[in-house]
Amino acid sequence: MDRANSHQDMNDKKPYAPSADRNREVILAALTDELTDTDHVFEFGSGTGQHLCHFAANRTSNTWQPSDLAVRIPGINLWIADSGCLNILPPIELDLNSELPISAHATVCYSANTLHIVSWPLVDRLFLHAATLLPAGGKLCLYGPCKFDGKYTSEGNRAFDQQLRNENPDSGIREFNDLQALATRHRFSHKSTLDMPANNQFFVWERIGT
Ligand SMILES: C[S@@+](CC[C@H](N)C(=O)[O-])C[C@H]1O[C@@H](n2cnc3c(N)ncnc32)[C@H](O)[C@@H]1O
Image 1 (tube, rainbow, N blue to C red):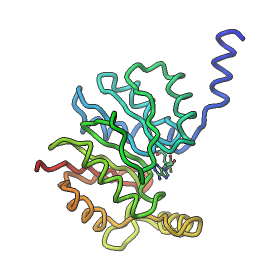
Image 2 (image 1 turned 45 degrees about the vertical axis):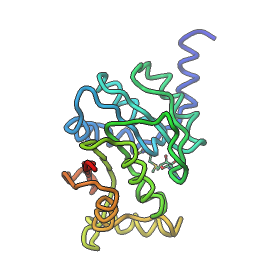
Image 3 (image 1 turned 120 degrees about the vertical axis):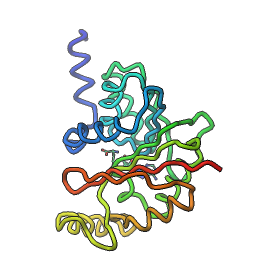
Image 4 (image 1 turned 90 degrees about the horizontal axis):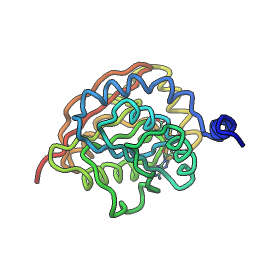
């Protein structure tokens, strides 16, 4: 197989999420505002790996650590191989319910669209893992839809929440006050909430020193 065909073959097998292409630029802009040139970013629930490869290609001074369930790792590896980025570490197999591997470290933690998929106890675990990974001043950046004081930010999000709960009663759009309570318990202080396109938010919490 020649080089061009081998590249085509890889592209055919790569998992692809159209939504990740639609929102990657706005998330990159929000993340960029939070990053210094030396940050080491740990991602929970990397999905296809599309986001992380795009961010790594545009933020070459940062190192990027993908992680997700075992079933996602081969797809993420295809994206990494195709990206040619040298600043992406091999993906870590991580179920949020499990312990962090000893090799894991970070100065910034990031996740997109995971809080409404995983159960509430696993949302708690995500904050716990971020608190374990991050030094004082380290940032936890989370992107996705949210409710505020019990209110949806759009009718579309209300319908999306119902759909999520029909598919899995443990899933669902989270309430900001509940997230904030978790954040406080895990010693994070709220830094900012940015309204994003398509009725999503980008939240930043900062790890408080002990
Ligand atoms: C909606 S996808 C989001 C993927 C990607 N971050 C994005 O925005 O395109 C939710 C992700 O959560 C991951 N996930 C589900 N359960 C998980 C668990 N128990 N531990 C870690 N990740 C989990 C899925 O594998 C999937 O990649």
